[in-house]
Image 1 (cartoon, rainbow, N blue to C red):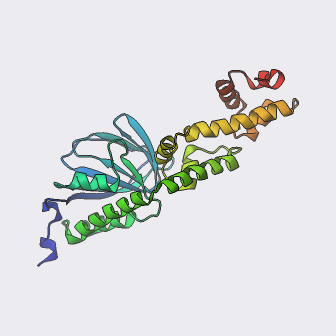
Image 2: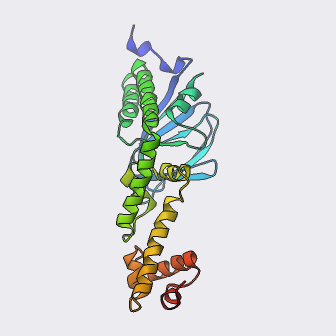
Image 3: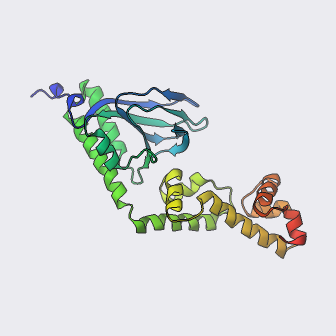
Length: 268
């Protein structure tokens, strides 16, 4: 059988219908028009944002996002570090079931590849198509291998591992709160996406990573203010990760209800 005569777009259970790759320019935005099949994008460099069902996801290398069949979405490259990604389009009678088994859901359309294992599958599908001019057996087999890898990554996220991710994130915060770290930095240190990390905190009944970072900073700031009357507000702010005194004062007042100066002289 001629390999070019095998057309994976015609298979009933799972069909590969589209593939592409793009190195985006700064701020490039796409308002996605719904299609009759699903698209999965895999970010392999840079950063961007993905908006789906009025929820925004900040994505980086290693993140994959799903736009289900019949759904619209918006996504845009970051201005300073625009993303690059592969994408594939899949359909078929069992595509929805396979995507769900891989870990994609309506409320969790983003998955993270913590082991850099998925890129090779996307690249192979893309290369196969542009070599043969059609989606052959190689493309179909790589699609199945991709979804199998995704499902195994999901299954490996045991309750113990999820607790470990949360604990590791807390330790990172405790060790680095004095620096201007972001939620992205915290998630990167654990090897997951910010959205996934927030979900892990919520699933375990914890406050959000952002709230936990703020609490650690504010509790340390309160101790510094009351233990050293001569400490300047600016110095205390810098000691807990706020280079800007104005930003520190605003955050402190929002957390404690009084200004840092008032707290220093009168307590809470």
